[in-house]
Length: 263
Image 1 (cartoon, rainbow, N blue to C red):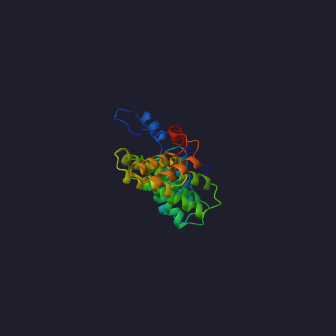
Image 2 (spheres, rainbow, N blue to C red; image 1 turned 180 degrees about the vertical axis):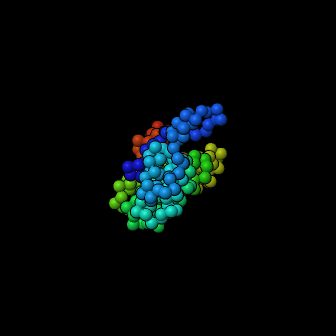
Image 3 (tube, helix red, strand yellow; image 1 turned 90 degrees about the vertical axis):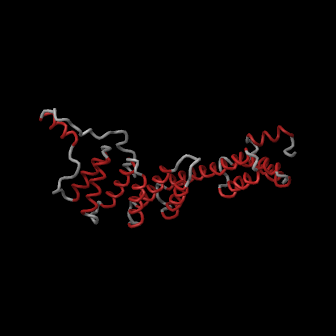
């Protein structure tokens, strides 16, 4: 979120637990430090929003969440509602509640597409899914969702100042998927299951052209084709590797092995 993203990180809310041995003065001081967990019941809509925003800025995200939810329930049409929902979503994201964050971001982006904050909300969906993207060996559904949502932002908000960040995040997610496919291909290759390896390696070239792992994919694919006796395909892949990535380790290994780029 512009102007608020990342603010308040690293701060802890005061520990409001206390034992029966505290004297009244100490207890009073502790209660003042902890502060109320909700805005005063007689607060105006603006006061409820300001109370919640202040907690957000202080990194007191659990209180901010309660405040923003109360504000949106009481006054969903207030002029501050869009900002409240965006900051509510950010509070969830800062609290490692990514699915709830994605839902709130989506609520704003889809129900208020003409809001000045709609592009921030759409990018928030991207960020929420990307935060849930797991390590490469695991299922990459959230990685795919990241790409979809970032692409949606670029399509519908091409002039948004967050487009560059969305493109970068989407590209990073694509690189991750390419690496996932290559990793599976390498696994089959290492077990001499070359036909299966070829399927996954070709998938990388088809679905993620120009990825950072492409030189390694081409090198593996060339060898896999050779091992199954597809000499012409192996020669085509080798030529592509030498032409497209002449400075890669894989290309240098080929040139060292025979000096001509062919078997």
